[in-house]
Image 1 (cartoon, rainbow, N blue to C red):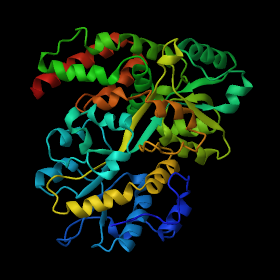
Image 2 (image 1 turned 45 degrees about the horizontal axis):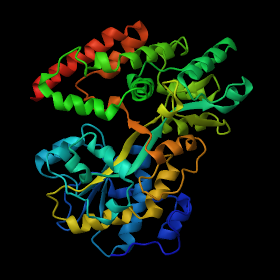
Image 3 (image 1 turned 135 degrees about the vertical axis):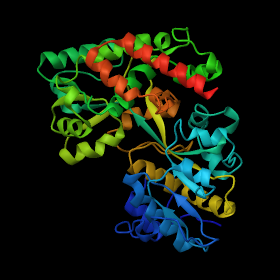
Image 4 (image 1 turned 90 degrees about the horizontal axis):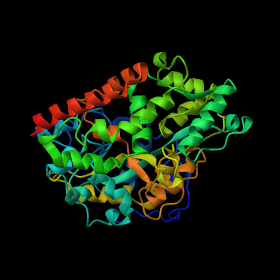
Amino acid sequence: MDHSVSSVTPGSGLSRRTLFKALGVGALGVGSGGLAGCSGGLGDDTLRFLMNKPEVVGYFGELITAYNEQSGRPPVFFDSTPTSISAQFVRGVPPDLACYNYQYEASTYVNRDVLTDLRDTAPAQQIAPHVQELVSQFADEEHRFHVLPYSTAAAGVIYNVALFEDNGVEVPTTWSEVIQACQTFQDAGVVPIYGTYQEGWTMAQGIFDYCVGGMIDVAGFYARLREVGDEFEAGADYSFSVVMADAVARMTELAEFDNEDAAARGYSDGNLAFGQGQAAMYLQGPWALGEIEKVDPDLQVATFPLPMTDDPEDTKCRVNLDLGMWIPAQTPHREAAMDLLTYLFQPDIINTYNAENLYYSPLEDAPAQPDERVAGLQEYVDSGRFYQGPSTFIPPTIPLANYLQELLITGDPQAFLRKLDEDWRRLALRSA
């Protein structure tokens, strides 16, 4: 069934309001409403669509409302409840179509052949190959089309444009320039970087991912660990303590320029402080920009990828597949699921969603990200000069966030890396 939007042009940079007007749905006041919630009692012909990323539930609710009004099919049930995907597979009742965060845990479903191969579908043909390849970094290469990327979050160093200009600091393109910029701000009485050690995830997705990802081949490193398997040995040339040593040393050097009370500050503190102009830089992704905007809508900020060497050609940005779409192989509603998948992958719909939410569309011919706060990462996304955060490859059974808190307070890189080696060794043995 054709779900094309006749009054808009693909890649036209639509606003959310314009898009939903074209779809025939009011852009305001149409959320998931009564569709979200428990799926019990659904009819045999009802498709269940799962998407529970909290900040965009309303957005997808509007899309599903528009689809239901024009599809001519039984209405889609939009399930936005926080839930365990693994438990649903165990019970034999996974969603018919899911739009879900994709990282190490989600790759389990890919490798176990419980998802549908989508390589021959129209949406798969639209995706840029270097974005689709991110799926296989967590899973087997042959399974990489079992999940289709829907949005890519690109992250780097958020910086206060006015503070850079007032202190004569240019956006750094080398590691030496990063350190020089930090020193300049410190000498001027400006906090160079705002740290939030109280919440370990902010360091895992921030300073750890940026520093390590900027110096090593992340995908190659973890592929080697999978190859070694239960023969992993702490201190070997492929281990954390060897491969990440230089990067972690530089990470501790960079942390010296954090605010003095970083150990007592959390994510909300960081957003507030940065929004109030209390620091020049903030190592957070696009998810923080909306919170900063609430503090000061007029604050001019932008983003650059953190350079970790003295060769600008080495610089890359951090990315993650914020949302990926997949269809369980066992669904009895495969045709309906494919119809909804195709609808949501219309260029105007997927490109508008990503532009509005500060992400990058995975489509090969997607328009540039229009928001200047993240536009500084555009060339890196377009050229594939990016890495998935090394923290996202580490399963939650290894308390990386806690180790990072200890590292940045004690400043002992060797102890930190030794713990990662030891934990990975135990994990490899348990998984054998």
